[in-house]
Structures are given as C-alpha cells and as structure tokens.
Length: 310
Image 1 (spheres, rainbow, N blue to C red):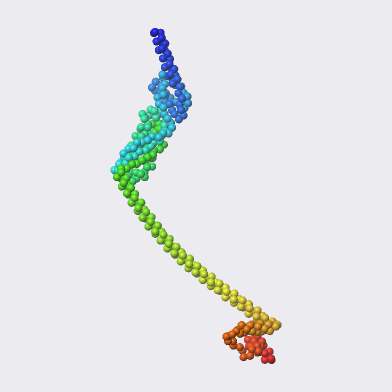
Image 2: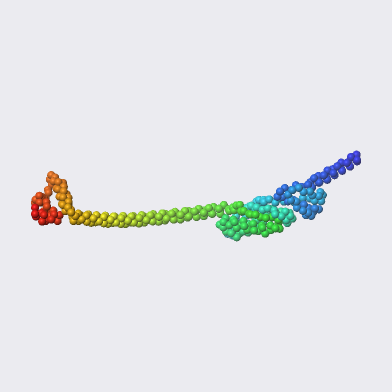
C-alpha cells in the first residue's frame, strides 16, 4: 500500500513540474509587454513573440498593453469663479510607452491619471466665469494634458489628448441662461431687421438716383444726337444746293444752256398750271401767257434784246 502511495506522490510531483515547464513557454502578442521577475526582483521585459522562462524562479508579474486606450473621467462637481456649481466629466486618451515604469513607477496609472485630470479640471474651472466655461473647453483640455505629461516619464505613459464631454449646470441657472440667450437672439434679430430695412431704403434711393442720372444722360445724348443730325442735314442740304447752283451756273454758261433751262422752266411752269387748274380753284395768270419769253427774260433766262426783237 505504501509502495503505491509513493508512486502517486511522485506522479503528482512530476505532473506539477510538467505544468510549470509548460507554463514557462510564453507567447507575447503584438503591442504587449510582459514584465518578468526572478525571485521577486525585476529580471527582463518580454516583447512580442515566443519566450521561455525558468520555472520556479521566474514569473510574469505584470502584463502591459501598449496600445492607446480610452479612460472615462467620472462626473465631478466644480465651482466657477462666480460661485456657480457645474458638473464636468471627460475622457483621457493615453498609452503606455515604458512598461517597466508603468509597472513599478506607480501602483495604478489609470486611477492616478483620472484623479489628476479631475483635480486639474476643478482648478481650471475655478478661474473661469460660467459664461466663459463653455468657451474655454480647449484651454481646459490643454491644461489637463500638460499636467499629465509632467508625470508621464515617471509613470511610463503618454497622454495624447483629453476632452471635456459635458458641462452640466443646475436647472435654475440653465433657465436663466436660456432666457438670456433668447433675449440676445431677439436683439440680434431686431438689429438685423433694422439693418436690412436701412439697406433696402439705401438701395432704393440709389436705384432712383441712378435711374434719374441715366434718364438725364439719355436725354442729353438724344438731344446731342438730334442736334448733330440736324447740323449734318443742314450741311448736306447746303452742299447739295451749292452743287446744284454750280451745275446750273455751268449749264447757263455752256452752249445751248439757256435754251435748255428755259425749256425746263417752261415745262415746270405749265405742269404747275395743269395741277392748279381744278374746279373751285383760283389761279392768277400773267397778263399774257403767250409772252413767255418776256417772263423768262425778266428773270434773266432769255436775253432782253432777243425778247424785244420778237
């Protein structure tokens, strides 16, 4: 019986050793770091890939995730410079850059980061009035990141950014702010309407002014054009008259010219008489229309000695 008991004990011991040996084979994932201690003292850091540690002497004390992680900052009550209580929460984005410092530099870097972010937020909110609190979110974020980065080397972390999620004010203050914003919007709307009416009147008067100017310019140009056209007409008539007179004069001085002019005038004269010889029309005739040569001679178209010779 004792013989079988010894076998069982040695079998269990061998199984325990085998389990320890198997557990000594570690596969480290990408973007992770395993902190190995040997006999309670830091020994080495295992990077991604397969590793073997010495059973009974080495152990993996800490496992650090090197990826960027998001940590919620719980809501907290803060007082502004004008003594208004607000509730502020946020979120931190950080990552582990030094696995050894994150393991031994602080007990819990996540909890510590949240506490430091809350205290920094309270201190920044305390320097701002309520109205500026909503406008200075970027200043709050930058201040929290700056304070956390001051201890980042000691804690083995890097804070990439901090964002304020919500700033909640009491109901009474929120109602007062809404009334203030409503009054401000009404004031802006009234100013906008007055400015629009003012601009509309200015535009209308400018349009009427421009219309009057355009009409006067058009009338001025029309009169100038009419005057120039009338002047051109007078010049053309005068030029044509002068040319016709020159041609008549030239015809009178040429051979047979007076006889041709006399014949033309006689025809025109008789045509006019024919047109006037209508019923109920009074026509004044010369004393003797047969003495046409004398009539034409009186205007210089027939020589007087010729008419007297007849």
